[in-house]
Length: 420
Ligand code: FAD
Image (cartoon, rainbow, N blue to C red; front, side):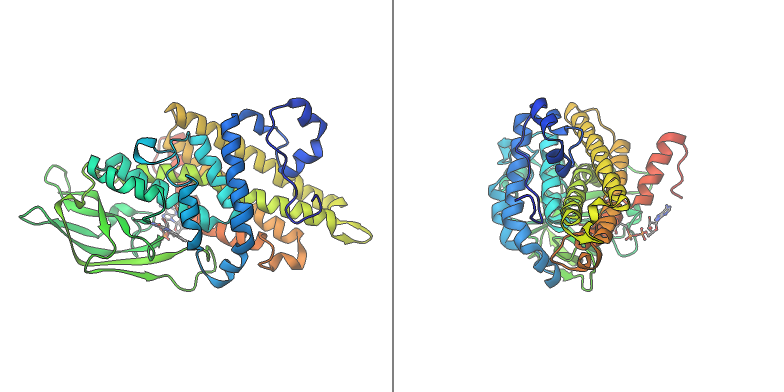
């Protein structure tokens, strides 16, 4: 149905002749550079399966979820069954064992549905499963990863505190080890995605550490959310990421067993390594939101007649669409190259900062321009542009604000730190 709100998607094809024969079809997909041809058959198949899942399960309900301020928990079992959670972690732990490009494409398609759905999957995959995989004991990995991969357990990641957002090194949450080896946790975390529905929280806390100059270190802990003294409070009043669970966590003398610690975590670099994973996925994810907005604007523009012709036939609207599709293509090339480098083990956190910063920024601009092209209907939840536009404001701020990534890139090019 070429006239529908979400135009027909072209089946995956590496065939250049087919591509050249159908430039208009490609233009609708935003794939003017035939990026499809740079993906393997398996990568396209994974992308197309998530696409179909989002078309069928997410798009019909997400507008209402957003209005109601509700995360669609009913999708979690299917997300697990499809292998979308922790998809780039090894099969030995019940995960799909996909490469990082496929992991990125999963994020792209989920966020074409909504940033809240992608945020759920990003947190579960990159901020809960990854730290257990990277810093956990073998027993922790064997126990948690298969359950989290299937969506049978939900996790959250607590780093940000009310007074320490961009500067997590200043955190005051504290874990004190007792004579018998067990731990007592006190403190609070703020803005925690999945916080109220999680079974387990990966909490970053300061511990005593005689080996460091400051006498403290930062370590990760697996905190069961039914532990005595653990409370999660919903963050009310959000005008962005409304279809996402965001909470404050409070730890009041939470008693944890000795083996609650992630034994191989140590220092701020451990949570920062998790953020690098998540930021990589976000660089892809936001392109999905941008594609959704572009496709909606293009379809609407071709159907909405004003002054006797479709508005997409006016030069100003074509400039908008040309800017959108160009930025999507550039963003995809950036993330694809980054994904290939990640698979080769050669990417750097600074490159991830550049991709996250650029792609969130362009996606935010695209969502705003799409909303404007739609005119009055662009403010309705029935259309996606304004929902994506509002969501992307959160994505602009979380996982390192746009400004923080400017400072990371600035330091990389000048050699001068400008953080304080
Ligand atoms: P601040 O750090 O107070 O920054 C305020 C402003 O000052 C920003 O514009 C910032 O760019 C700027 N600024 C700060 N430092 C500098 C500097 N050195 N130079 C120039 N400008 C500066 N956190 C988690 O731990 N887990 C989660 O699951 C999670 N989910 C989130 C979900 C949502 C919906 C949101 C909105 C946030 C989430 N966060 C989460 C928190 C997020 O990571 C923080 O909001 C973010 O790190 C920014 O911190 P802040 O809000 O305290 O802003």
